[in-house]
Image 1 (tube, helix red, strand yellow):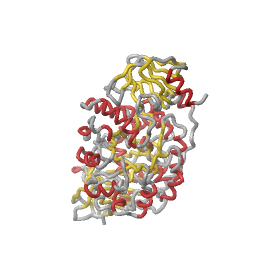
Image 2 (cartoon, helix red, strand yellow; image 1 turned 90 degrees about the horizontal axis):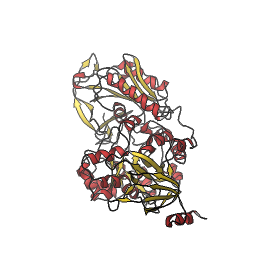
Image 3 (cartoon, helix red, strand yellow; image 1 turned 135 degrees about the horizontal axis):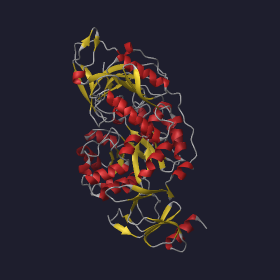
Image 4 (cartoon, helix red, strand yellow; image 1 turned 120 degrees about the horizontal axis):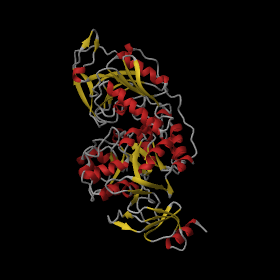
Length: 564
């Protein structure tokens, strides 16, 4: 008997279903009703609802509610600091059954080898990991990346079963001004899915950007920005990550009328925040607690997300739809008690049955050894640019200050919370080193360094003391990448991320626990930021306004140019 015949027979009740969920209700995202009745599954598909069924396996869910599996519409698994296999094990129990990832970070370090690693991993994971092909490697001409991916290197991956389309097109100036490299990639994906990335873009520039058939956007930080983009045909991905926290600002657009044009994403979220708060389940219950209708959030988490990315087989609890299901205690609490991914119950045994994928990029940190004198900045009587950190945002302000000097060197100004920042090229290409200043970390001593430095992932270090900055940077080479905290010449906290300098080889539980100690070490330096490490990681991101730093110098993002 064919699979199709089995589904039909089980749906009409001629044969017992493979699995029956009995005693609960499901949330109908079409009408907004809670509907009682059994839910029958045949393999990876729902074949019956709203009636009673016999099953080879019956799961009692009395008093519980079933909702469609959650879809994270944009994230970088690398920012979870664990491999795709460990991310799967960490997040699937929270009800995430589909994750649409952009391997942009590992691609910027390793190129096609990094993309292939993610695709190989996606074939083994319990959740359905879909891959967007990284569109901007390198992200800009203003930094040194570890790889270069022109369209010719992306096209061989286009027909892979796990590939959806072209990932976030961050080089929006390149689109507007018809940069030949950008145009070649856009031309190749016309008619397919192209993901957007255009913070604060509006008016005719936004029109030109959207004329390239870019359909989704996760960088909206205000209701006004989101509404303009929705009116112009974009599907808005409401983001709440470890650094970029836009959910509260976007609460006014979370309405039933707009819900078909909304989805949810985390972008960058680490295991400690997942453990403490949750994943997409956190977004759902937080918004509901702030007065958003449950129907809005569950639609955005599933059916609206599926439709935005052309995943036509999932997002509803209905016959003929993929059996991605979450059994929760209540709509308001959104606590996942049972998760089924493609009809398979998420469990330790299911994770253990996956085939491992060999790690890549274990020797990607090739930075030169630095010394304290490398962080010296010549004294100046003029005002100099200072990056202004905004807590919970990756947008930074372009501030200018006249800073104190000692001898012939510009000094930090702790009274105004201005410390040093530097980026050191780590791919072994040119040895570039750029220094600058940043305001908003709250550090009173020591240094924090990272090989996670979006998007080219050079080493970024912030600090009060030049000697501590040098110790931190050099330690990163010794541990093959990661995060390091130094105080008084001594390493007081670190986590090794040897997979491309981005991901740990340890289980997510170990990473979570190490991050707790790492945060304590950072807090001991005086930082006032809840997530100082990812905040460091976003300082070198020259596609996000307004002032950033790369290995080539300070970058005026509004002018898309280095500052002399």
